[in-house]
Image (cartoon, rainbow, N blue to C red; front, side, top):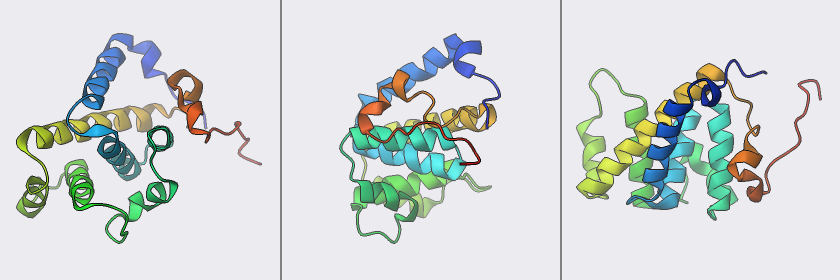
Length: 167
């Protein structure tokens, strides 16, 4: 697989603004653990290989347990997530997979029981931002792991040398 285009290079000002928004969220009301879960789950749903790779490495750097990373895709069946985390993951899925009727009231009631208005607003921004990043990733096809050094992700200890497709 080769990258189609590099949005960081061809649209640097827009990329910088999106990075700024992402950084603002990192210092907001949600904390790294919830942001990591949101980023990974939305990226899984959207099929953004680069983002799944990157956010799993970030989560590992932030201290996330390896088994919980494996269980994000099966969070409904897994006993490893708190009610607050489950609500965030359900909200992430509902906002990422918007249907004709929007976000169901039941999903809103579940998340509202766990988050105040500021946190819910920040959570919704986080879901929106990762969905935007995912759209950039699935259209431009950056190679997973290709920016590990630039992004400081080698600290996760999960980077592997690039292998050929025939290996």
